Picture 1 (cartoon, helix red, strand yellow):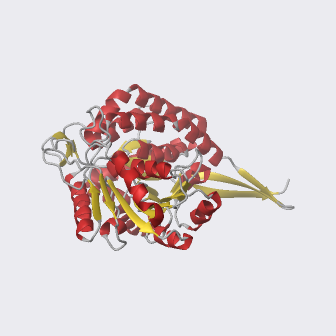
Picture 2 (cartoon, one colour):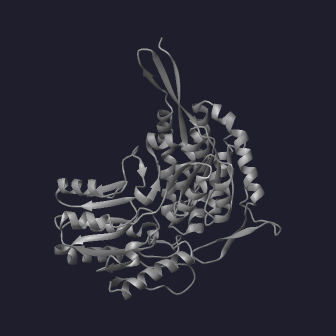
Picture 3 (cartoon, one colour):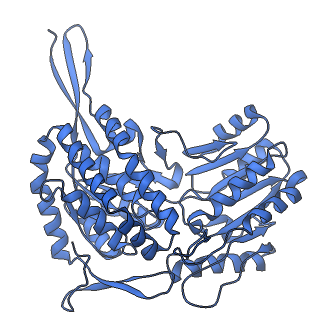
Length: 465
């Protein structure tokens, strides 16, 4: 599946270990002709796959997920080696996402149920057809979870898929594709490997839909390319999520949320807490609580015992984080913890805490995607809290902590984001949609309505019986 070491006659790219910088493998990159052929094969397979009863499609996908479980140890080791997250976190990613597939398939079944509408002289049956061929382009930060979020509903609704995982996690993508494809008809799922140029070729090819999880800038380029063919889109993009802490909040709980969700996965999460606004009257106390917790976040190889943060995924990603922190300190922010680039191999960076961060700094404006806790103060006014939270083009998530639940709900309703957590992190209950508002997305994933975005409704009308 283009995941084995390639011959020298093929274009290749290096799969690097972020903990050492060493080459794991040279991966064969898809050529333009292979992109075209992959889409052609997927299109040829789609008619029969779309006509396959849903229960058979679901059965094949569940068998593929079972095969993933049988290779869980290998898969976890591969995830840690390719993108650096601690081995325990990789194992949790596998368990949590594979265990949720049955529920997702139940939601898809509900999404595909026909709807019957009746009037005196007519009856209309609304059915949902697959769109055709879906290009699924996925990121590296959750290299199993994000592909599952796209592939399962796309395939279960009767589409065929051409799947391009991030070039930073090609072996993880190959294991996933192999496990699923061996339980599906030929060419229902086709794997392509490569960097952004391969993704751009796939987007420009004869696909019917692009499902993408990644950066806002790449999402914009995909949208521009797709516009010529009016291709359907689901884009889950980045965020600059705020956490608002009022003076009457449970400060310990708020500090737990701030630290965990700023630092988990080395801060490389689209819905990380990236801006924290604390009411001035409790800011000193809150800073102390945050520092106490952040100091426990040891960084190192994901295979080491006691490590909570692995390396950043690449030298380029670390450079961006370093530059934001340096600019913040130069711009007047107080550095309370970390902030020093470690010596030695790998792209490590320590848990870092900044305080008194002004709104005009890059660390307040641009997605950081690194282990940085950024603290600012506000006067406790609800209007000011909402203004600060909304002072961004992003709108993925937000979090509010307060002892007054009515106030928390008022503020949550006024924040322009797809998800808001009140007195807890924003993660929703199973079955809730995952929405990127504003420039954090186009369309949305999860839930019955989210799965329907991989289909097109068709109305078939009859005379009333």
